[in-house]
Image (cartoon, rainbow, N blue to C red; front, side, top):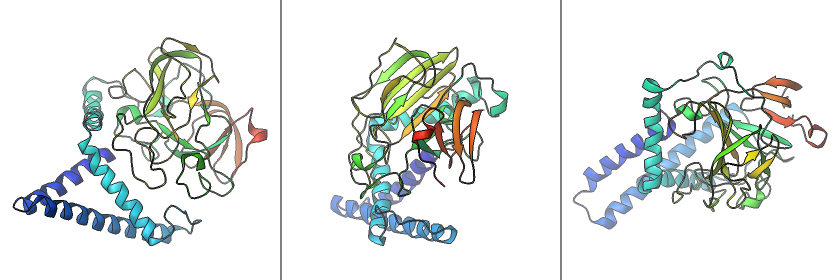
Length: 329
């Protein structure tokens, strides 16, 4: 069961309890109870998260929630905006389609579960220039972006980090504070553009962990490219108005296709990209691919990879731009 479905069930059960308790109450009282309990849940979640982190390691304070008040507000914003997703028919339909994709794959799909057993048909380079961190994703169940969502099983989220050890400068409350915002996104291989979706705004309340529940697309603005038979790539959450390719257009490896943004279901600017065995965002299976000619730093050593996978926690950069990039330690 994927994380989004768990959230829906959690909130659904909680709303059922509220409905039973408040069915004889006035509307204002009902609204009060909903927000009161949401605030309480947010406080508990923030408290236990902070305790768990403090036992593991001491990290540099993040100005977005470096005080108890900010941490509670961030947890509250995330919980409430998650709940409001259910009021957006566009998102509700897409979430249901994601769940349906799991059922479809079980009976009709051709899933890949062991990365080494898949023989990719094309050589790929990283879809970004300079040094980025793999924030989420890998080729095992433990490192997977979303193992139970077929098309996102081998997906990745990439962000840029600065010399301050964070993905942003300043207070992180402006899109321009984030190092990867408006960075060029590149075609990882030669291919033909199959689909382009643009016009989705970049989530405006960045830094607050309030998700854009009014967005019309979970993936935001994206480009879908066909690289080979049954081998497609999706690059998502692009900046509105930045996409410079169109359906039917042939693109070359390394060619800019758009700019990194914060559109769709995103809490901060980043690139989400995935490879899949068909065109659909919901009814296809993810593909594990190796990238060619890049540097990888896992925090212990820096190595040049002729051809290999990437995984969360690593810093990666293309060979050509290595001399201009910073290696994090």
